[in-house]
Length: 101
Image 1 (cartoon, helix red, strand yellow):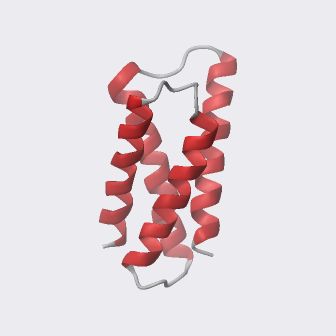
Image 2 (cartoon, rainbow, N blue to C red):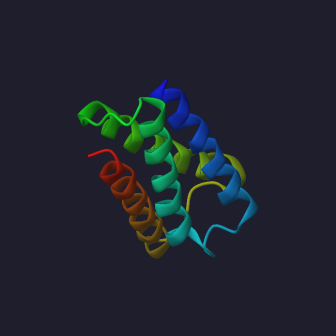
C-alpha cells in the first residue's frame, strides 16, 4: 500500500513539474513533493515509521523526479543544471525521509 501511494504521489509531482517550467520552482517543488510523498506513505500505513518506509518514500521521490526528466523534456544539459537538479532531488528525499523517521 505504501509503495502504491508513493508512486501515485510521484506522478502528481511529475504532473506539477510538467505544468510549471522546471527551473521556476524546482527547489520549492521537490521538497514539497517530498513532504507530500512522506505524509501519504505515513498515512497509508497508519503513521508507522521505520527504515523500510523511509526507503519507499525516498525511492518514490527519486522515481518521480526521474519520470519528470524522461517524459517532458529529457535530462538536463550542463554541469550547473545537473547540480541544480541533484540538489533539488536531495532536498526532496531528505524531507520525505525525515517525515517517516
